[in-house]
Image 1 (cartoon, rainbow, N blue to C red):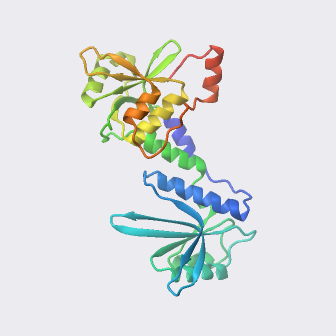
Image 2 (image 1 turned 180 degrees about the vertical axis):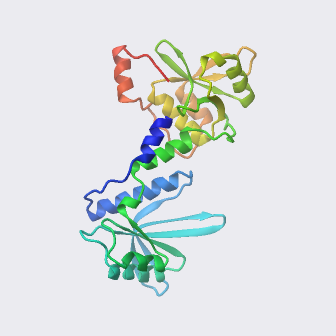
Image 3 (image 1 turned 90 degrees about the vertical axis):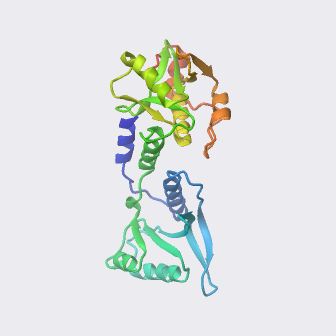
Length: 284
């Protein structure tokens, strides 16, 4: 998992031949995904009309707003998909548009960069001037999302579960019995640490107990799903009895996150194919 995250985050945005609508959709998706990394329920909309201070309506390609620490943030993004670099006159027109919308911050995304002086004029007037290649790629966003959710922070408190993670690989450890893989969830940190201490020889040396927030639990379920596995909850008894829980029960009883999990486990195609053929031996 750690290697996958590093690979995804290193991926760059490649220039593409977007039409104007595809460019706006792409920018909207990128910003929606970036905002979703913080777990906030923020809607990023396309083709929005804002009423200016002088009563004039202004069309905005991509728009979002949110409140943070009691302050309302409003951002308008202009998408320019021209065959040549963006000229200063068009930047000036957008600066004037934003100037008529108090409290709104402006950003321009130009598919083919800026002509001399255009970018400086935008930045001198408080407008963020970006080229398409300045935006993170979808792969980079996926990598950031996996890093934020799939690998729990050491300071996390379980909501409600704790799990054992291989920090080198960046993935949860699981119990295997021939072809069966089961993710193990613990009800307390102490319980999980005692279990790890008693089974030290079964796990790599860099394994640690980490608390799962609801975002982490979301990623944990998707990870076990991808490997075609099931789920065990360890009780607090002396012998650490592992009780199997169905995916449906796990989600309905313990998952209260904002993001909806798929009704059917999304097993990786290569795993599903090998499981169906009877050749699969789980490795985690």
